[in-house]
Length: 385
View (cartoon, rainbow, N blue to C red):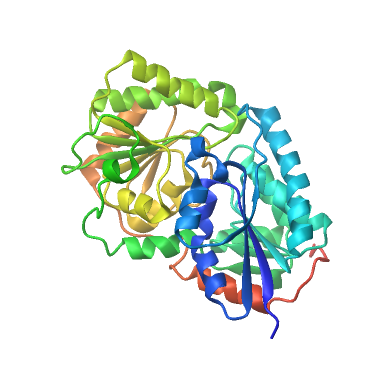
C-alpha cells in the first residue's frame, strides 16, 4: 500500500505542542509519511526557537520557511502572511503532499490554508469551530471554510463547524492533541527538573519549593495599541504580591513590542526579586511546570485547555479568550491591577480544581493519524446549507 504523504506546517511555539502527538502518530503509522515543514516564528530565537525542540524530539524537518517580517504590527502580520503564501506554495510544489495539516488560528495559519487550497491539496484543520476574541476569530473560521477535513476539540466546536455549512461527515471531535501530553503530566508528583538550570532565562531565581505562579500574557491584536498598558497592570499585581513567579515572553503578534517594552521598562524601574523570565520551554516541561504551579495568570489558551485538564487555577485577563468553552478552572478579570491581584489571592486560597475533559481524553493524536489515512482525498466540497 502506498504511503500517504502528510504535510504538517508548524508556524509558532504553541502550534508545536498542539500537534506533537499527531506528529508522533503519523511518524509511527505504517501507511503514512510525515512531511514536516517549520515556518515563521517557530524558527526564530527571539520567540524561543521551537525548531530546536522539534529537532531534539527526533522529527525530521523537510523544509524551513523564513517569512516573518519584523515590526510586530498589523502591517507586518499581513505581509508575513503574504510571504508565507509565496514560500509555502514552493514547498508544497516540491514535496507534493497528499494532505496538508494546519493548526488552530494564528495569522500564519492563513498562509498554509490559502497555499494548499489554491494548489488543490486537501486541507485538514485542527481546532476549528471555537470562539474567542481578536483576529484569531476571523482566521479560524476562514480556515474552516477553506479546509476539507475538520479535527475539532469539543462537541460545541463540532456543532459550530457544521452550522458554518461544512459536511458533518468530514467533521470529527478528536479532542485537542495537547491533552495527549497533559495525560502523561498528571502522573507527575514533583517537578522533575530545575527550570533555571535547564532553560536559563533572565532575572531573579526565587525559591519554588513553597509554590509559584506562572504568567503568560500575549497582546490582543484588536487592542494592540494598549498592549503595554495591559501588561503593566499584570506586572503591578505580581510586584505587589511578591510571590515566586515564572514569566514567559509573548508570541509574535501585533502589539508584542508594546508588551515586551512594558516588561523591560518595569524591570528597569523596580526590583523584581520574585520574578524570572523565560523565552520558551519544551511542551512537556511547560506542562509539568503548570501542573506543579499554584496558578497561571495571563490570556493564553493553555489556561483554558491544558490547565482545565490538569486542574490548575487560572486568572484569565482581558478579551483574548472571550467565549471559549471553559472547564471550571478559570476566572475572568479586566486589565486592572486590583482585580488581577484579588483573583490570584482567591485562586491561592481555593487550590486545585477538578480535572475537566472538555477538550479531550488524551487520544487525539492516534485518532487524527488514522483519519488522515482513511479519509477520501478530496478538495472539492458542497456547502451543506
